[in-house]
Length: 536
Image (cartoon, rainbow, N blue to C red; front, side, top):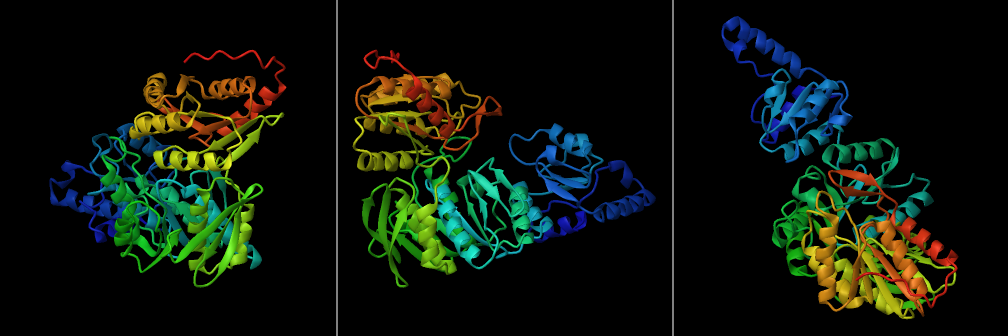
């Protein structure tokens, strides 16, 4: 168990400490005796054992060191942590209301939080072997594919299931939980890694978001393999990245912590990506490009499955995907590249891809009469929309009409409103704009803004505020039209909450909404000649 003094030493060694730990009390230095007493008290404070470390005041327990971080931090959070038994806090400023609580005053609280978390949870590089995956789209699917490959390999050796930190869920050998964010804050992240190490897990696969890199959540980590999938403009807003360069630079910074870099040669800006990847000890390239170290070719559809050949120095084999969507080949080959670095047998890779389905990614549902196919996918930015519609036109050409349902978040990724509106308008026959994490913005105003761009592309559009109502009405609309319809429900996938106002509201997943809407549509006994009236 570490002490407050140990934390102070670690922060000082990294050049992060502004001053020693201790409660601020000017009166104590008035004479030599009181100064001596203060020095003795400070020494006692430093010897206090740290029993927990958190930046969430609700998680504080007796013996906690609390971290004051973020623009949204309020002094009452520290008060709540102190009431729960916190013995010290880490901050970039002393909190006047808590002068009696020892403060580790630091220059950069984000760097300090990462360093303190690594020390408290006993981080050991390589235990477990850590894969980091970044990119604008495909991180979750790639993570699930790679985990499945590693699981198949470990299972064959009598070893436990491997770990996962993803947008959908986290598994560390002790707990399997729904994820709250793509990449957790440093204390949570290091707790997951510590649990994995204690549980005997040899591999951990994790998604690495641009926010995690920008705000230094992963600063102390060493990635045995780092995957760079792709890049396009996204997450541009005052709350996230000020411009594309800020976003791209954050993504590229991961290579400073990577032993082997796996780079997609088909990605935009690939020369800049490869230049940054030189920070890694080794580079392995993948993609359709003929110069890729691990390249794919000969793509075809066999029944419900997409198959393709992967060739490299070690093998040339065919692979089959359980999931639809030709864009998933890129994710699969990225996972194959990382698995090859670890030495996973090809048979384990093939088995994993043949069997793995990812919640909320290209999930398909059908009405009872087969006239309506519903697809649920997490596509939520320009690159993912472009890839998805391209796959739909190739793989679902039998459907006469495409109905697209989606929304845009409030207060962030502001460029999506125009980009997604125009793309959906160009490739859909009808678009319904609905809610998707409006936050403190007015959801109806966001929808109206997006709708204007849809109509600019010449497509009919309507706005339905409540997401469940939107899915239900679009399924009913499709059910009353002649011919076969494809409904695309995009943006949320398997997420179970919406950010409405200043908090999270529990909400059915898109998969649940689609399943229920198509079931209702199939059960409804109405004259198909009677058209549903939708205001546009």
